[in-house]
Length: 422
Image 1 (tube, rainbow, N blue to C red):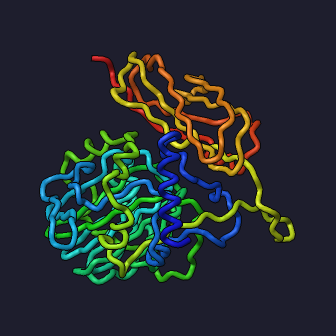
Image 2: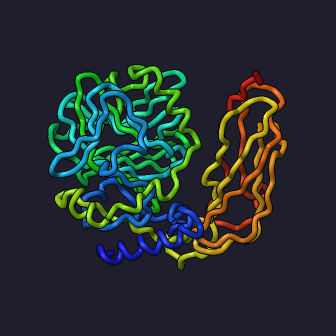
């Protein structure tokens, strides 16, 4: 795809989203593909310049950092070249409203002048994945906030500090890959993956890091295996970027972001000339590439490939239950479902269970859904009678009546702590 074609596709996608919402962009059913060809790798971050087709979020700080939660020591600096977000005091800055993002590729152009910096994805009250970099190494780890557990995933040599680099972190259903300047450096699998979350950048003690541009796109293909990487999995992560070393107010601020979504205008500002930014502000020596989606295919017993299959693929994209969560008080539940396949779906049902006792709290019969289209279903739940922790579940087609590409994405669950009424 050339640059002009990508720009036309993006404009068409924006027009379509005005009627159907962001999820009506051209999402493919490629995550059910069985072949490696066309699979996504975070190494694909320094190829031909193009506009990302599956754009979720864009930031180059020309309009400040209004969409970010920033603490002391984080400022937007403007020079003759570009505006950058600079951090020099231990802490984290994160995007407000990305709490429902999942299966995305985060690209960030950063310069670590001294100390240690961390790039976070899937940042939520549950935890986060983070790429940590200092002069000693490039680390990929998972942090669980409830008990402070750090799970080392992979480590490799660090890039040169004091220079601009493109860092890329891709997360898809527990598979994680890290690229630097278009070269895949780390590849790991989390057997107990985080569900979703926003992005953030952080620095430790006596550190200084500048962030120039951030681009987040949907991963529309299957991330491929990279078994030949030189990496280690047994290491000690620098502790001054962990949540335990951060300001005490951060966990509460992250919790406030849970389930919050940015509008399309907020995520991709209308006054930003994306083509000009990608051509100039992002610097031509480290351009980006739009990821092409492979076709959905099925392999025969003999290993031969049949013709592409036309089939729907329904999945629970997000569940939003705004606070306050108080016993006896009604709750607004919004379940967003999407058809990621390449064919229209039949009629199907969606159910929401407020607890693990199997009692249905809300049920919808949904008309056929076209490919790439999303639908948000609203429900007012009367409320939980008693305070405590509850595990809810949203499920599509519980009886398995719909023929679709994959049923592995038909559910989404989460926990809620219901407080006692005052």
